[in-house]
Length: 188
Image (cartoon, rainbow, N blue to C red):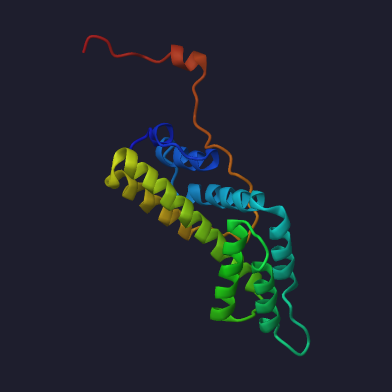
């Protein structure tokens, strides 16, 4: 994999940072996973505050009571939100929530299932965007290498937990004295 992808492939800054850590800094999938989670969470939080807040309140509430599991109420509430003008991310979240509701029903972990599915979908969309940009610049082989590392990292991502952006990897740097005392091989 090339080590200059972050310089030659134009991406939005947060995803360019992911590409830099992947190609130039050679982070492993385990190291990339928290960075991907924090980047996705920041993307989704910055997307739309108003309609996203109504959706978040609906998902947090759960629409259940003593005599009903709340599945029909949740479906109605999600359709009501979909009738408003929404951002792409909020609309996608509603559609994914409806899919989770149809597949698993209302469960105690409904909100976590939706959050995980939305995070994975947003990350996959960004990975495909990144891979298509790389393929246009450097070819499909380079793009498939990047896609493979990102797919392995995505398997390790937990979007239900709040994650801070990971710190840079600490590299062993030599002091000026250590650099000056380094022996050089001459004449060989």
